[in-house]
Length: 152
Image (cartoon, rainbow, N blue to C red; front, side, top):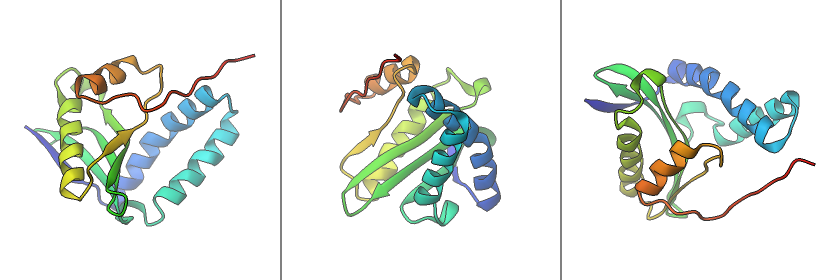
């Protein structure tokens, strides 16, 4: 059975240690930045988004559990004023993939967002993440914009 548990402070810190290196690598690669600059930008962004860490108002950070085993992570923000939610990160650990967990987590995100007053949800996905794009399309997500680049 898939369940969602809010992160405590230790779990939050462990999550940041897990998530940040991948985020920095993706940011550096897709924005053609050196690792030092990508790290600086990522750390600054986390400080802005999560000034009170896991207790930051409007931020929702969960462990995704499959029969009490850690199966992944889910992080989203709900803005009650704007009545919208934004998915910052969803990640299913390799051993738990291809079981419908990401789909369950996305439905959880949508339901929690709606319950918190959102009538719109959004997310960002790198263009190279084709499997995620297919999942989002399957669940009714539509492209809102396309950012393109070219290496010279």
